[in-house]
Image 1: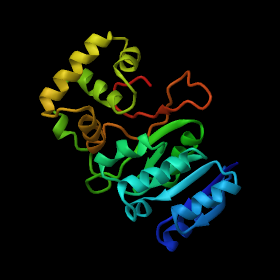
Image 2: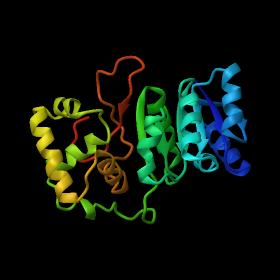
Image 3: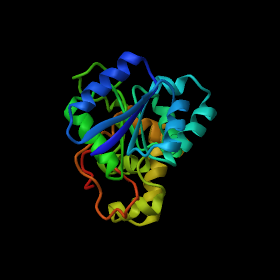
Image 4: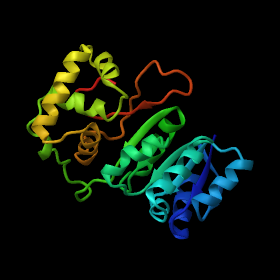
Length: 231
């Protein structure tokens, strides 16, 4: 059974999450705190498997201060942010050690699946859609890209470097670099961080039921739901 610590956000929202989590036989609420700072104090004396932080708690501090707090949290337990996060800020969260970002449109089954996947060592990113729930995902900005270029773009957001992307797609690093240069030219961007933001904004990466095989204990793998990716 996974022990969960809830932190931040309105008390009623926290209680609602606690009620949903308590209904699952796989998770148990270990504690709730009103702030992330209080959660860090709890983590110094209590062992938990998962820290769930309301996104509004991060907005209370500067970006630099929030990253420091998240690094401290991620050093002690797997850390997930709940709520709406601007796509451009997602790379900052993952750099701080956050292993899950779950938007507000997940159904309970999807929510628990995502938490379980995080507990097993993967990274799950599920940003809130920028359109109404139930509407089809918007990929208009990615229309100029070929299917292979979309696959490369998704992996830019998931893997650390061109060598890892080349291994995942059975390509040479030189070919991957060529694909990335063409993607940047087509989308009118000049950095990898901008590409990552576009991948999240256009929901090219969503929670999925599969995890890449071969992960060593404690090693993270990103769950991808992009069409055509064999992960």
